[in-house]
Length: 261
Image 1: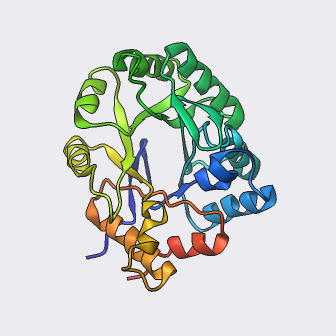
Image 2 (image 1 turned 90 degrees about the vertical axis):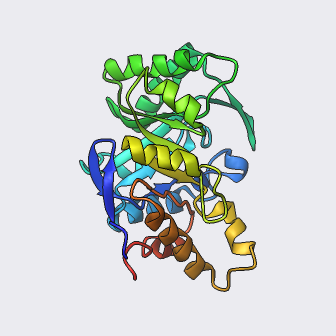
């Protein structure tokens, strides 16, 4: 059976297969890409090919991916969802430290509004729960900004069911972004919870951060990527994969995953 190509995300019916932008930055998710022109071309090509959900974060670069999205796609199409995240500090390539201090989260949102040049962010995630700050304070501050009109919809990233059940008593959560793939089932219980609560699940590293291609099961990389993405789309109707790439040919291959039988 072929999975539905579209689903409800952040209040819009969109194509379930989206695009992640982490790989549009420099090595270690730090600094600009080797070619800004190529990154801009890829983003425009993605929208041309029907992508309606682009996932990013202020920590990608930092600030590089959001700026590339603005340069490539502003003014944005009405049917395009741009999801971003905040709650990390960056100290260098490959270095990430969660920071959920409410004042810092507010600063993150304000910066993303400017970087993306929007009045309200379509979908905003707490990028990582800071273990040193009460979850209620972190989600509560984001909910304040949602009520202020700076954020349209809220999501959480890398969370468990206990954290989710607490968060939904504080704010309406419409999306969860956890690691999940054909090689990584660790969030299976969270997906079932999302299904029961009609919440979108966005699997980060949907191609297992490249591990799938070296797993011994793969003979053709483009075919295997399509297989892994089709598997995700068929796994659950609340699944919205966001495969990332810096190459247009890989983008085109990935986006055939929900078309070809």
